[in-house]
Image 1 (tube, rainbow, N blue to C red):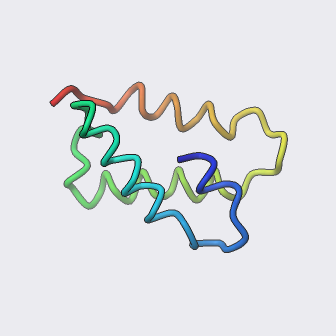
Image 2: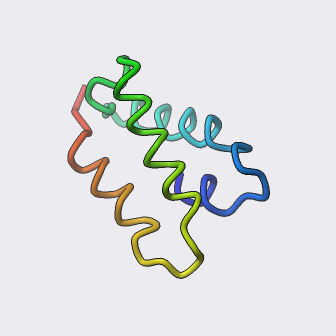
Length: 77
């Protein structure tokens, strides 16, 4: 997900695609982002992806913030 969001030529080009694929893979493995069906939670997640996309190459928090968010918000389904 981080790669599709961060390493792309267009500002909003692959964000929806990366989220859709990531959610599908998580659900196949019986996980989901807790509360993701709520608009507020989706906005929070997309803001994090926007923030990730705007980081400079080499920034050590590119992946870690997404990982932390998922650790704190994943739930087993």
